[in-house]
Amino acid sequence: MITDRMERIGRYAGVLPHAAEIARLFREGKPESEAAPLEVRDKRYETKADEKRQFEVHAHTIDLMIGLEGEEIIHICPQEELEAGAALPGGADGMKMRGAPRGSAVILRPGCFVAIYPGEAHMVAGRVGDGAQAVHKWVVKLPVEDTCPCTSRCERHGICAECVVWHRNPKNSLPFCLRKKGEILIEREISRRAQTEGGKGEDGEKKEADSCS
Image 1 (cartoon, rainbow, N blue to C red):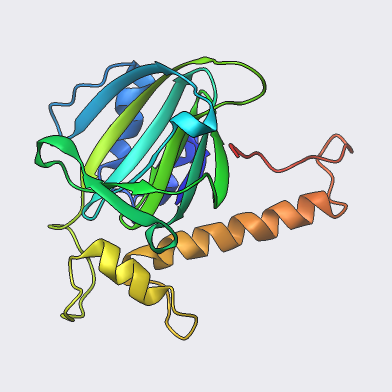
Image 2: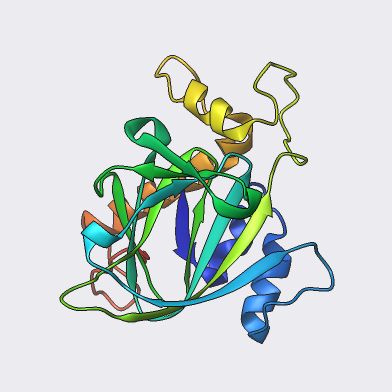
């Protein structure tokens, strides 16, 4: 999972296909692309009570969610922590998963994005505060089975969900496709700690790290 502000999405081009084109579409406010084979779904709904929400997971698709209006909580956890449910309708990639909200709770705000990778179960539409809130967002579907950059031809090559689960073993390294992401997140954490542990900006005031979560 990656979460950040849209103006920084270009930093993740190594782990997010078509990042530059997605940034352009966002700036122009239009979900259709003539330069890349992108499926952009325009979503509008209201946030829900937890008992009405459900996890789902994909095997070969990155869900890139971009906040436009409103705020919602998205819970994200490894799929192996949940019980498998029904397949998604229409032959879509993935399945529903059964389980209460758990894992990382990310708040998707306008101008921010959350990239959810194969094998990461996600539950959207969580309420921020009391009561329902209208949400408007884009969900960009990014298939990954034909773009696996790993040079190892193991039995998990191109099967993202199985690869991520195998690499979660503490004795194994990050998947090849996520190593650049790991470097970026480490740099962000070092920067955040430097600011929150006494670092000050040019104006002399202590500054907090910018975050969408």
